[in-house]
Length: 196
Image (cartoon, rainbow, N blue to C red; front, side, top):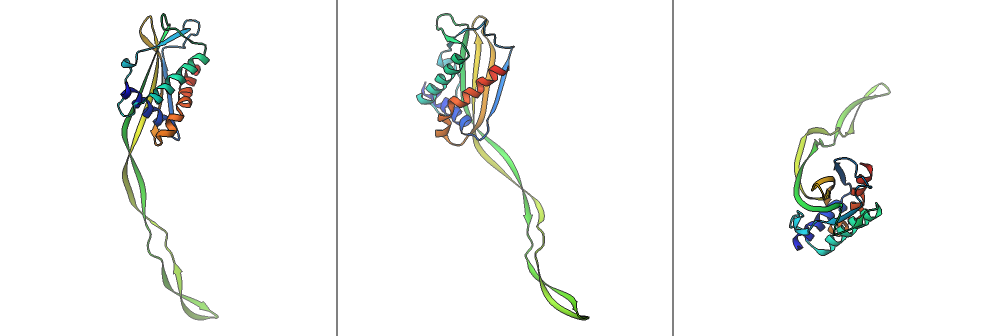
């Protein structure tokens, strides 16, 4: 249980601490409010999580945020005969990306002898010369980072099929900020439910 919570916290941190998040939603058609009115949670042991971040704070924030979003859309909790089952997955992965930066060579600045004319006579003097940089190629480097994913599934209880899946992906750079931003990230995931 602690591993699950720890994973959820990290995934939420990944999604919340990023400067930009990617949100996706996949569905089998619009979630019909008249057909689906109640929901219940799938047992926690059936959710998939990585064992990186596991704590009760992150899990509670995720569950509270999902409950708030569903209640705001008119769904009610009913653990006896729900129309929908809710499952979430929070995982983090170590990822890497390759960045290529241009490399320039800057020739040294120098004084160059110059011949000029003044009142009809040749004059010699030195002029300061700073040439433009010369492109020398690229420098490739590999950057390691942590990517977090939160996936929320709405499952039709009668058919046991996923009818809607919302996903948020992002890079974790500040775990504390990520945990604080869990409600905002989940809210943006559920905005995709309204737009589908």
